[in-house]
Image (cartoon, rainbow, N blue to C red; front, top):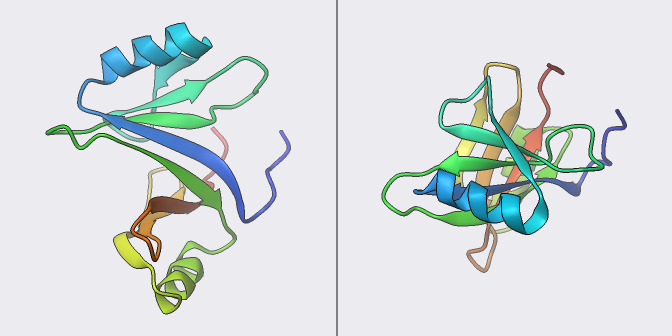
Amino acid sequence: MTMPAYNTVSWFQVGSDKPEQVEKFYGELFGWSFAPDPNTEGYDLISYRGNEVPAGGIAHTPDAANHATFFVLVQDVAATVAEAERLGAKVLAPPKTSKDGLVFAHLADTSGNNFGVFTPGSPS
């Protein structure tokens, strides 16, 4: 598998309080397939034809906290978060590490648009 270049959009997430409904929608519309993430409860991985690894996820969100966001692959999440704050971003969720070593954070840019940054964990 070829790793995407740093500082590129390399993951996306759709959050839904009705994950089965949104999975059916995207599955029928684009032919995407879904599987539970073994490292994160309440999260399903999105795969699609022509891509050898999952490219996104469906977050099971409570209380209609629905969203769609993109994630940028970075070399150092903490350093990127610090630089984003220096440039005027707001930290929505500080860096967190998943069971497999994935590190991610959620930010809002200077216009309030939500996005994320991440470094991958160990290959499964």
